Amino acid sequence: MIPRLAKSTLERYASGFPAICITGPRQSGKTTLAKMAFPDKPYMSLEDPDIAVMARSDVRGFLETYQDGLIIDEAQYAPELFLYLKSYIDKDPKPGKYIVTGSQQFNLMENITESLAGRAAFLTLLPFSISELATVKETAFSEDPFEVMVKGLFPPLYDRDVSSYDFFTAYIASYIERDLRQLLNVKDLSTFQKFFTFCAARIGSILNLSSLASDCEISHNTAKAWISILETSGLVYLLKPYYKNYGKRLVKSPKLYFTDPGLACRALGILTKEQLFMNPLRGNLFEGFIIGELLKQRLNKGLSPDLWFFRDNTGLEIDCLIEGEGNLTALEIKSGKTFSNDMLKGLESWQRISGIPTKNGNCILVYAGSNKSNINGIKLLPWNEIAS
Image (cartoon, rainbow, N blue to C red; front, side):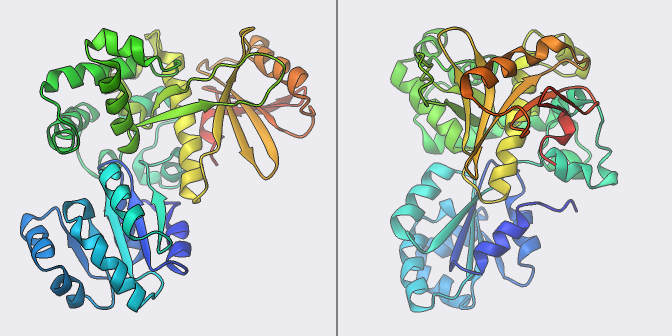
C-alpha cells in the first residue's frame, strides 16, 4: 500500500475537529486513506443501496448504532445525515469522531457547509503525487515524465492489473453516466462528452467560455455550469491570474487545467508517450502536469492552493506564482528534456519587473530533463523534484 502524504494532515485535523470531510475525484483514494488513518473505526459505505436506505429512513438509529463514531463513505447519498450529525456532535464534540468522504463535492460541501459549519475540517485528496509514487519501488515508477503522464496517477492504475486506456475509458463513461445525471440535467450525454474533450484541448489556455460554448453548440450559461461541476468534482482546476499591479494591464480570466494528466491524455486520444511527445499540446499538458503536482503538494498539507499565473499586455507570462510565508515564488515550466538559455527569458524579465532578488531562490525553471543547477539566481529543477 502506497502511503499518502495527506495522512498526517488528516490525523492533525482529527485531533481538533469532531468531523473531517475528505473530498476529491472518484477513485482518488479517499476511502483507503480514511481506513489507513483510522483502522479501528467502523466503516459504512452509503454507496451500498441497502445501507443508504437504512441511513436515510432511520438516521437516529444509524448514528446511535455507532456512538463512538465511524467512517461514512460516499455520504452524499444520504444528505439527511448532516442535519442529525450537527446535533450529535453538539452533544458529544469528541475530536475525530466522524470521518466523512464523498466524491460529488458540490452536494457534499453544500450540505456540510450548511449543517456542520465550525464543526468540520476539510481535506481535498487528489490522485497520487509523483513524490508519493517515487517512495515505493514496487510501483515501477517511470523516469520518463511523458510515460507517467500518459499512464496517469489514479491509485487503481498502481494496485490493479488494468491498462490506462481501459481505466480512463470506463472512468469517463461512469462519471458522465452516473454523477452528471445526478448533478445536472444533461439531456444529451454525447454533447457533454464533446464538451469534456474540448476542455482537454484547451489545457493551459485562458478559459473563454463563450468560445467553448460556441464550439460545443451550447449556451454560455450551460458551459459555465458544466465547468463548475468539473471543477467541484476535482477533475479540472482553474488557475487564476495574479492581480498585483505592475503598471500594466493584466489578464483577468483563469487558465484551465486537468488535475490528472492521464485523464486529459485519454480525452485527447493520446495513448502512448511517443504520441504525447509529438503532440502539439505537449507543452500545455506538461505544464498542467506540474501545476497539478504543486496543487497536490499544498492540498496534502492542508494549505490553500495560493497558486496563480501572470500575463500582461506585453506578452510576458509566468506559468505559476506561489504565495507562501510572505514570499512569492515564480515558476516557468518547459516540456523540453534539453536545457537552453532561451528557457530563462521569461523568468529574467520577471526578475526585472517584480524586483525579486536573484539570489534567494524565488525563481525556478522546471523542465522535463534530469539535471539540476543554479543559473544567475534561477533554480533549474527536473520534473520529478518539483514537489519533493
